[in-house]
Picture 1 (cartoon, rainbow, N blue to C red):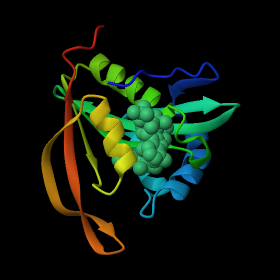
Picture 2 (picture 1 turned 90 degrees about the horizontal axis):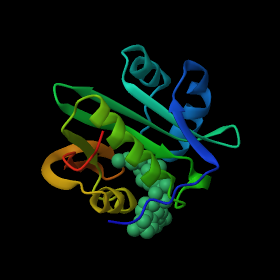
Picture 3 (picture 1 turned 30 degrees about the vertical axis):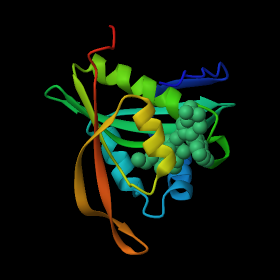
Length: 159
Ligand SMILES: CC(C)(COP(=O)(O)OP(=O)(O)OC[C@H]1O[C@@H](n2cnc3c(N)ncnc32)[C@H](O)[C@@H]1OP(=O)(O)O)[C@@H](O)C(=O)NCCC(=O)NCCS
């Protein structure tokens, strides 16, 4: 597994409603089929584990995790385009794994497009393995794209 580069200039904190404008700006830049602002607000409202990574007073990345009944699901993890490739995604995912453990989860699940090579590489390097495939799950320019379902057990995470 690759080493997590810890950037002292960034910090992870809970997402607040006042972050939504910046979070949505990144969401719209990063995804051809982005979440709506309403979905993002609902995640906060229902109490999902929502995080932002801040750098220079700006939202550099954010993530949303749901956790219940011993399972956690990474619903979104997204690094601002200008900040990608500098270890922030890995650092934020490490934080999510700790948060999932703190919520009592023993397994973390996520879904990813097979075409998203950077994300698949990141998840595999962090101990996620493919456990399933949802056929034609995502919209895409070619019609539909499968979703790889990946899981990571948390047995090695200490309290
Ligand atoms: C996927 C994403 C969260 C990864 O975050 P990141 O900060 O860019 O990634 P990191 O810098 O932590 O790097 C993670 C790994 O991917 C590799 N990587 C990063 N950017 C890359 C690029 N442009 N091309 C190839 N590999 C790349 C890194 O080398 C690193 O692997 P290594 O540590 O073995 O060298 C981020 O790129 C992103 O937000 N993408 C758009 C939204 C998205 O696709 N989210 C995931 C949905 S499932």
